[in-house]
Image (cartoon, rainbow, N blue to C red; front, side, top):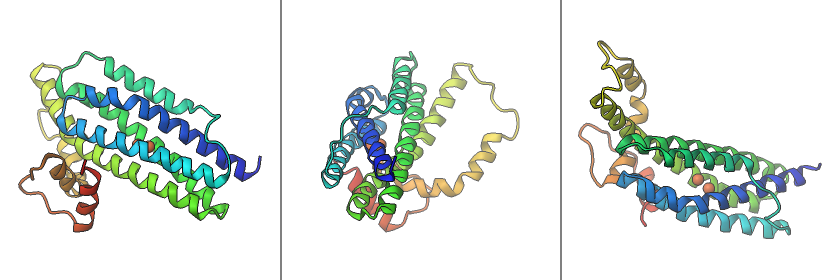
Amino acid sequence: MALKDVFINELRDMYSAENQLAKAAPKLTKSAKDEDLRKLFKNHAEETKEQIGRLREAFEILGTKPTGKHCEGMEGMIAESSEALGEERAGASFDAGLLGAALRTEHYEIAGYTAAILMAKALGMKDVADLLKENLAEEEKMAKHLHSTAKDIFKKAAKEAKMDGDVEPPSKKSKMDKDSERDSEVDEQDAGVRTKLTGKSKAGKKAKPAELKAEEETAVAE
Ligand SMILES: [Fe+2]
Ligand SMILES: [Fe+2]
């Protein structure tokens, strides 16, 4: 099979994946208990529709149809999301399950677009590569937002578990503390993301670069 055929297969797979996600998104959005998480899912559902439009443009340039392939990988991930939706958990612990599924999904998409962009470049199809890069940028931004939101929600979920007696409080120094120290650099980058989502800032967090802030404001403007 020539590279162009492999490339078209890859794009059809992504087209199927995005359409499955667009269909699944409303239930996920409606089910999230945290307001920021709901906003994040809602915003990305709109982006997903735009991504589908860009993929259609890519297929027009290629002179072929986007349909004809079913993305089994995304079907599996959506099935796992449905399991998380079916869990009878309260508050942050429920959202933690959704976040785990959502992060897996975004990184799957990032991998798919990364491969497709490399193929488009190898084939000299700059117009198609540029369209795919727009989609990839949105997936990467969503993964970053999810990462930031997950840290707060997972902490809340851990507290809920302690209150329920599910988890023994750490007696001494904390592997979690060590992990937190290791994550401190990422925390600083993520502080601005959380600020935008909540409209509030946290004391002690560094301001993020103006360019990143402007990009994020665009993303959550709706
Ligand atoms: Fe997507
Ligand atoms: Fe996505």
